[in-house]
Image 1 (cartoon, rainbow, N blue to C red):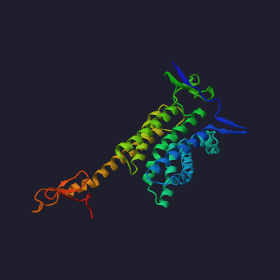
Image 2: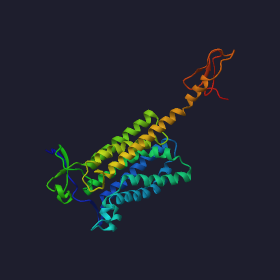
Image 3: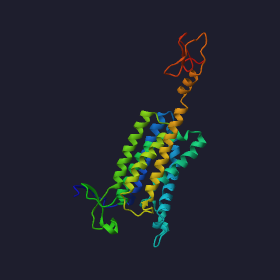
Image 4: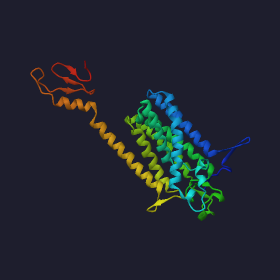
Length: 313
């Protein structure tokens, strides 16, 4: 029995005088603005210029919109090019349908182009933007609520989403309540944003590892949420295409995190100094083997002097 439910909005439009604005588009725009503002703050905290984030966004946003729409149209081509479909509707972006994978890929391409021309570290910039992207995605998902789309299968849990009969699947028109998967994903994104901010501070993640953790954390949630959805989708081996995409991207992000972690260990300067100190021969002036300080300096007990990071001339 559903004890509490979220009603669907009566209209996907916001009336402003003679204008009819689409809530979906407004939520996407708001999500972009919030992502940029968070990115500006994080980029500036690392010593970068806030204006660089705005300049990047001018290119990344249109690239992301095009990429997101292309991904959606390609992976759901029957909706636009199947029997009885209208191909022109592939351009109706305000009606919903932005594939996050294509949006991130397109936006990343735009950022990479600008970063390369300006000599900006692409990996560092991606790390700075990662939490804001998750917050922006969470806001954008609210647009799906206004469109009454991308909800899950019918539910009898104590909570649910009320869907109007005209928007229900043909095989469950008598079911009033469905899983609010858009809300699940929005909440998961906010939790993931908090996770990666904490992990960056706790473990000193850098060189693209924050962005990789963003990909891993998002896809981990998207996989199980996707399996709840009932909207039309292509399947591979009986599994929704976006689930496979989530699995592949999760494994790729995890592999990057592990490889980068291993690379950081093998190239740690302190360990290199310790290795060098272990091979220094003992002499009459220094009969005892040298010690290595916590900062990576070589200390000779006989003279109480240091060489290395602590005293380089």
